[in-house]
Length: 48
Image (tube, rainbow, N blue to C red; front, side, top):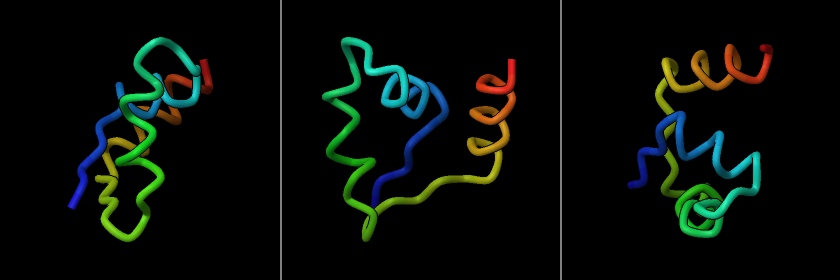
C-alpha cells in the first residue's frame, strides 16, 4: 500500500523536480491510499 501525503500530491500536480519520484506510487491506484485530511489540504492549497 502507498500512502501519499499532501506535499507529494502538490509536487505531482505542479510537475516540479520531485514529481517523477512521486508518480509511481500515485499512479499505482490499486495500492494507493489517500487520507481524507490529505484531500482537504491539497484542496485548500489549490484553492488559494
